[in-house]
Image (cartoon, rainbow, N blue to C red; front, side, top):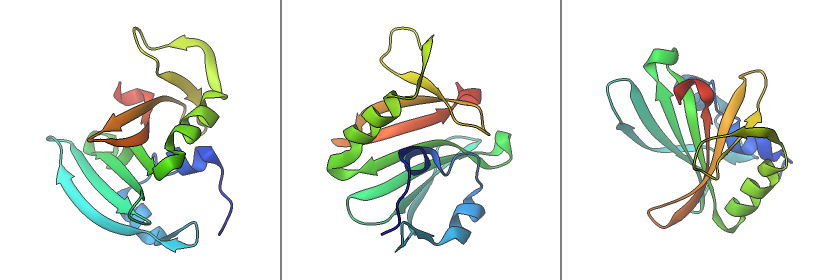
Length: 134
């Protein structure tokens, strides 16, 4: 399997269009399969991509941002919290979101992103959001 950095794994699809992700086709040497699509609002569309039953991504595209991905949720089975902890090492010191444990990090060339560990419907994920959508 190809080696990939934690930043690329958890935020590599940000600022990419759905067709751009679809054209990749392969991720980490495995076929990237689109398994679901839903309208989340007037400008937001959510798309789920899977590598396996326990490894997937939920990507939110925003038509107000040229139909590019503004949120990436990475579900990585038992390694999800470890991914979050690795990202935490690169957090921007002193920059915090009020009353929260989330943190910010630099993700050039797209700028600063908000990183959050979540448990949604019983599944752990690392959520990375472009600061522009906050």
